[in-house]
Image (cartoon, rainbow, N blue to C red; front, side):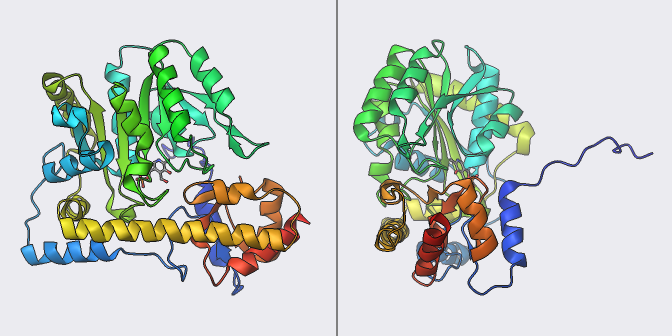
Length: 399
Ligand code: PLP
C-alpha cells in the first residue's frame, strides 16, 4: 500500500481549466478571456521595451549570480517603496519604512501573513472583501490567519456596496486586520473613489483597524502611478501604519520573473530596524533569499530616469488599450440593442469586468469564448480583431 493512498485528488485550478478548454477548441474565432495577464493588440503576450532595454544593460554589465541578501536587492526595494508611497512620503523621509523584496505579489502577501501571524498583537483574523482575488483566502489561511469577509460588491448596481462596506468595517472588533485592494479590485474592477478612500481612512482610524494594502496593479488601472496609489498614500498621510504588498507582474509585465515587495510603515527608524530583522527571520526558512534577475530589471528601470519615463509611457499604453476596449465593448453592446445596463463596463477599472454565470456557459458552448465560471472577463484578451465578434456573441447570449 502506498504511503499516499489516502491523499485525495484536489480540485483543478479554476483558471487553468479554462485555458485547457481553450487550447482544445479548434475554432479560429476562439477567444480566451480567462487569463489575468495583459495581451497586446494582437492577443500576444507583451514584453515591454523598457524591460528589454534593461535586460540589454544588464547583459552588457555582465553581473555575477551571487545570492541576494535575505531582504533582497536594496536599490530595488528602495525604489519600489518610493513608487508606492511617493517621493515626498513622510515615513520614507524619516527612514521608517521596513521593506523586503518578495516573490511577486503573492509572496509579499505570504510574508505579510506569516509576519502578522507571528507578531500582530491582536486577533489573528484578516478581513478580505467579498469577493476578492481567489488566492487571498488560501494565502492567509496557510499563513495561519483566520479569514473573514466584509461586504464590497453590490450585484444590483454592479458597483461598490459602500454603505455595506462601511457598516461592516464599523462592526468589526477594534484592532481588526483588514485587507484592502489598493486599485483595480480583482475580480470586480470596482474601486472606492478618492472621497470614499478618505471616509474609509477615517473609519479605520476610529475603529483602530489595521490596513493591509494589496497593490498588484499600480499604474495599470488608470495609467498613472500617483492616481492609482491614492488610497495607500492617503492612509499613510493620515497617519496609518499600513502594511503593503506590491507586485511588478502586471505593470512591468514581469509575471514569471516574480518581482515584488512587502513593506510595513514603522513608528520610527529604530522600530523599522526591528521589523526588518524579523521579516528576515520570516523569509530565511521559507526560501532563504529572493530571485535576482527580475529585481535587477525592475531596479534598472526604476533608477534610470530615461527608462522610467519610457516605462511610464508603456504602462499608460497598456491601461489606455484596455480603457479603449471597454469603450468599444460598451458602444457595441448599446448599438446592438443588447438588453440590460452596460455602463459598468466603462466605469470599471483595471483588466477585469463581469458577466453572469449562465451567460458565460452559453458563450463557451456556442461562441468559443472562454472565461472563468464566475463570469470574470479579462479585458486584456479583447482587441480590434475580436471585439466585434465578442460583442455580437454577448448580445446574442443575453437576448
Ligand atoms: N493580488 C491580486 C489582487 C492579484 O490580482 C494578483 C494577481 O493576479 C496578485 C495579488 C499576485 O500576483 P503575483 O504573485 O503574480 O504578483
